[in-house]
Length: 262
Image 1 (cartoon, rainbow, N blue to C red):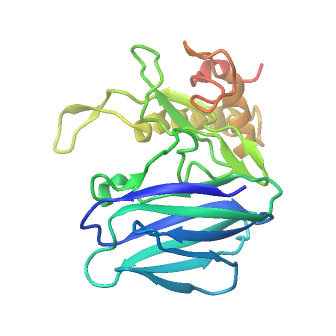
Image 2: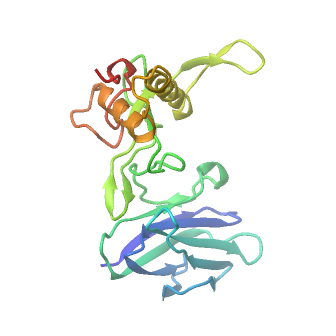
Image 3: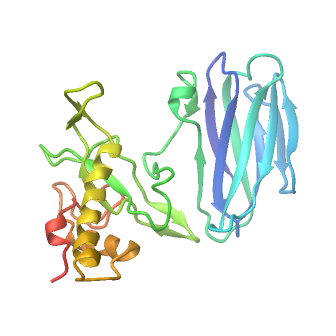
């Protein structure tokens, strides 16, 4: 069954690039329907770039290959202006299945900071919003919560992740990331929010674990996945979540005191 994704393009949008991620085992052909109703495709998967023109918009489509570290396939879709701007209105991206094994796919746009207001998917989802480097397999992915109210921070990226034809729960843990007091540029202190300020809590906790294990000789091989396993085990529940791990806070709130093996 075809999937139709609607994309709104605001006026005076100079260009737009879209990334489509899917498993390489799935074979999918792509069609584009312009705001005026003109359709190009289905466009078959072939090596090298393919170019098409729809009104004042030039389409560049490129089917990527799996990387040395991933079985996923990235499809690049660039919308370039013939003159100054691409066609405004509602575009439709049609995915036509030819051979489906997993059926999992994601579409990504650039951050809203580089898009005109009003440009975006008409029906976006609030799942799978994690981005590089949190999507790497062996990293400790850290979400954010409010350390005062213990509530989930709505700006925090959510999983799950599609990997190897299956689903991986991310983030691994959550740490305080709302109104964190830190030093300010030029002196003094300020309050900041974001997962960038939750991650240092996990970094410090990992350092304490490794100091205990490697430096003090309690666990000389305490590296990588072992540290992650200890932090997951020590995580404590947060209000509002009954199932762990989950796509918002993973295994729970960071608690290094409970992470040390006994």
